[in-house]
Image 1 (cartoon, rainbow, N blue to C red):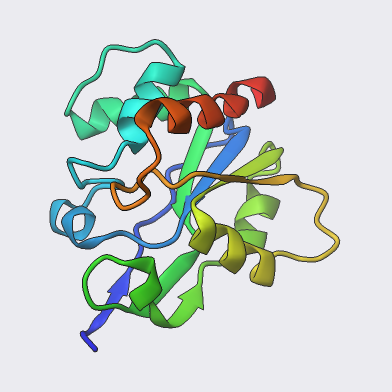
Image 2 (image 1 turned 90 degrees about the horizontal axis):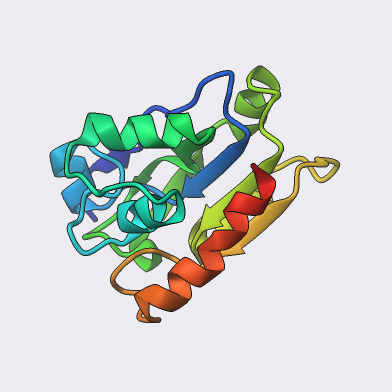
Length: 162
């Protein structure tokens, strides 16, 4: 197993209403030091489609689109060991402190998980008494092979919580 990898800091501010959680950055994202940095991952394309924005490769502009639409972004896993980018290869994971983030940013009213690994991990670490709704969305990873249109359709639920 390779060295430990770490997630990025959260992208969040006091205006954020929705938190989108991934599992942990893949190899390309770690290389680029950007969330969803793999060119075939559909996360950014979905975000830009949802909010009728013109797509850009500029990472700072991508982050501004999230903030403008009151969306926060983070990962459920802080550090782990993983060979490659597959969630199935994650070992010895340590979770991010989601509870503290939610207390600090009390405007967060809904959590959406980008794929099954983030959803399952969050369910293990989130306080059972949490009143914040959590939804599982289809992974934007190219390995999750449902069509872009279907992913986009499922992700449209986000707009009902803004």
